[in-house]
Picture 1 (tube, rainbow, N blue to C red):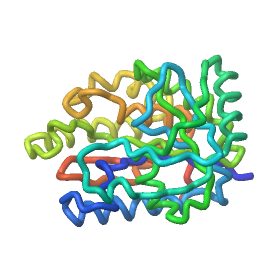
Picture 2 (picture 1 turned 90 degrees about the vertical axis):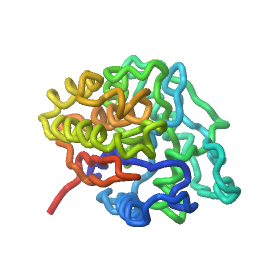
Picture 3 (picture 1 turned 30 degrees about the vertical axis):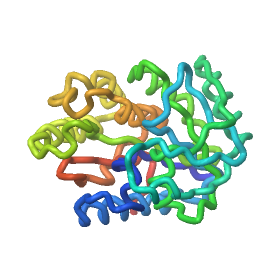
Picture 4 (picture 1 turned 30 degrees about the horizontal axis):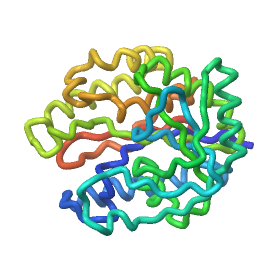
Length: 269
């Protein structure tokens, strides 16, 4: 069975593609088109989608284990239709247990949650990529403390699942400063940080991981990420990538702030 790729995607802000939030239409269309395209990356239909979302943190990495995950509208102050979005993908309790086994082999403690629902870091990009909700999906949380090295190790432990038909999708943002989101003065910071990140991701894997571990020393790092939960899913993706080089698959903007997406293990013609 050909190995599944790994992706890190920017999921945008709130329920943006399904509700008009006033974002520039060209930016909305470009990012939505990119997110829809990730369905075409796997070399065969995935057995399941494993999502590492910026919007879930627990004391230990915790896997969603419900056979029928509900929706979790983890945003506030949006129009009523924002809370009527549906994406009824089934879960996969057996593969959720397999995730825990893989992490245990890496000496990583885990837990399971059979009540957790799909947060918008999952249902927004995957409703675009899999609008029929026809592939089982489940989430794995980040670990509280958001240590980059720990999340690279979590990714490395997950890597064998790629050979078992699991498509790993890390969902975050390469710029996430809500106070500065509508401030054009922050655009230059987003450009500087994203340039550093692109250079980092172009390095061979050992150098890439070393730089990611020390991401907070990058130009504009703490302006781009006052809190790093939206960047940490990239560490999980890079760890799961192993020796695969990163490909810059998306480089666009949202409200003028630079965002990038990365693919690993995708065959190119």
